[in-house]
Length: 92
Length: 391
Image (cartoon, rainbow over all chains, first blue to last red; front, side, top):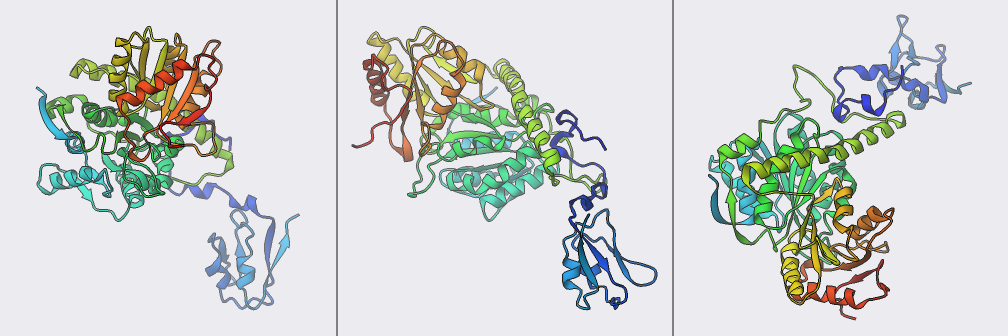
């Protein structure tokens, strides 16, 4: 998506399209990614609850994964996961 | 026909704002602004003004409330002074970035410490870079006229920026002066209903004041700078129209006996009237003295300042605020900077005066001219001095 010039900005930078924040992929900020070890996961969903970005989703089999378009790699899910099923690994 | 009445300036300003049919006022009382808050509140309570008067708990809330009201499409007004303005500071650049045409009176008062309730410009000067259009009134009539013009300028589709009108605390706010109050019909003719560029309404959801990263921040700042620079054309048009309708003309830089002056003094706000008397006295003595008054502080009137001082040998810039450890008073710095690239420019002197309500008389202005004229080598030019300070 081409960035707008200063002349193209709407007055007061008013955003007229509801929900357009989803077009902004915060995943580009990430330097680490969470990796779930489903063998340790007890499906408690604490990662889902704590994710500040709301990007952790439950899959059909009850385990969890993050939407990498939005996961900033903050590591809160890994920190809160008491069975230690989530590991943060460096992005390549 | 306009009615000539004797009113305290704050009351006259509140009456003028009511004539603008504001929808909402969010004002926290603070000396010497309080009478504006009180009178607006009275008018709403008495059913004379069909507006919401929001009794906020601080100036931070006052500015937040008017931002919200303006975002919802209301013609919103507030007024403050000194510490109150400083408490609003955090919100001021937000109001301008969101391009909300809020209007505000600043009853200029010294900033603490030490605590002082009297007049100088140390409250408004630190707000210079907040993106507000900034106007200075010299007398009661100007306070009334500028308060009405402020809405028209702010709400112009090519401007959409907040405006502050500076009214010297006590020296102006608490004076009872004759003033021509325009009629409701005249103000209605001059000021059309507010048409916002966007509003907060559930039927058409928008986001105002969204987050921006570095990829857009520079462009947003550039757009805001262009907006306030371009507002000057509208300001000039509005003043021209005001002159036609009401017979009182307004210019970014006013002058008095300045055309052939060899020495000029520059004032802002209420000091202009006193300085004018000093010019008359000096002219009687054969001194080619003149006065320029800076009415428009932002956007800064570069062309008008250059034209006004083009033929003068010496220019005295007066300041009512201090830039501690800086190059001189804030007005002095701006004037020097504006004239830097001119091939011929006057020797510029800077007197910082009238701080915290210190009285400045005709005698003081005459004294400034005498001191500057005695400095034949311009040895004290380009520096600043605290006028009248006890050594």
